[in-house]
Image 1 (cartoon, rainbow, N blue to C red):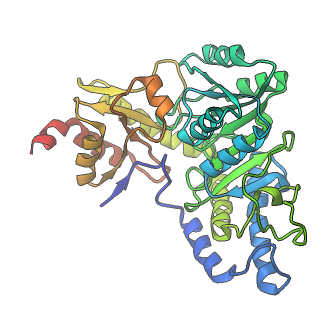
Image 2 (cartoon, rainbow, N blue to C red; image 1 turned 90 degrees about the vertical axis):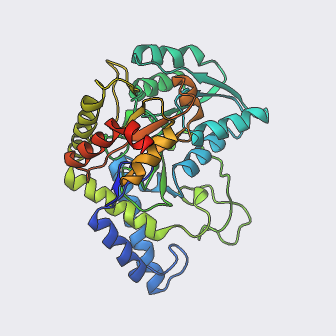
Image 3 (cartoon, one colour; image 1 turned 120 degrees about the horizontal axis):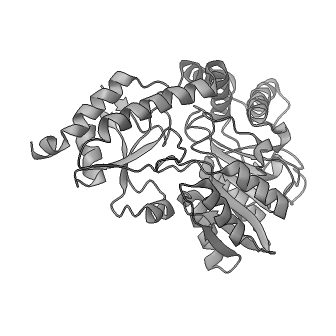
Length: 379
């Protein structure tokens, strides 16, 4: 039987209600939202708007400022390239996923912007000071992950958001590893929140969100049909239309809305508490074992993700051996070059990321096989 501990990549299994919503959407919402006045299109538009409204309410935003995207990468690219379209200085953190780091570096290499990287430390005051030192008169935006996708390290995002507010700087937050398990709101000082729909929000793959407070304009990087202002050759300027070109993933949006309802029923705090218990058990069982390195610093706060290496065996081989025993774990660099450079993990790590559906018995079964990895390697 397959046991999934790679929920930081995408949650699996999905809640029963989400699976049912996907099936119902295929059967019932076959129209094209916002494109037609007939019954099928209208019914589909209503379902799409209901999902948008659920996401907006969940994150403390207005529905018109809630944009559905393909994934968090799509959202971050729209936010970064859109806000920085006229140039300026951009700051990102040293723990950013490539979905934020690559568009930032690409703009800098084209000399469209200047770029700085703020070092992240286990001590949050050091991290805040790292950002503060880099802000200058032409700084236009700060991009910061709320929680590292490699180690789960929580960044002091509320304090960084307040710093940005004081300096008149746009704060773009990557919530891929935090949304759904923490009570994230735009009122935390976030101007633009980008997140995945298929991770902690339990939607299907191919879903994401860009949620803005509307304070900073976002120039569209994709233009096309929006179902509005169809006689104009110019992209609409109103949200969400300006950032939602082409036929949207209506089925995906419906599942995100249903995933949010699942979280509200269970409680984000309860979901996080369960996942944290599993992480604590995993760490307590393995940290005393000689030859196992767990990438966590005492005193720092972490989302329920654990990166580790074992017995000098490459991370890819560890994951492959455990995969043969039925466990799904991510190995390598996790699409986060900056984070691994900061950690000094030249061979990457193995990442343990449980979900609300995992059990302690499953964790203990995994621990057993991790402890005997050398024997398994030689067998």
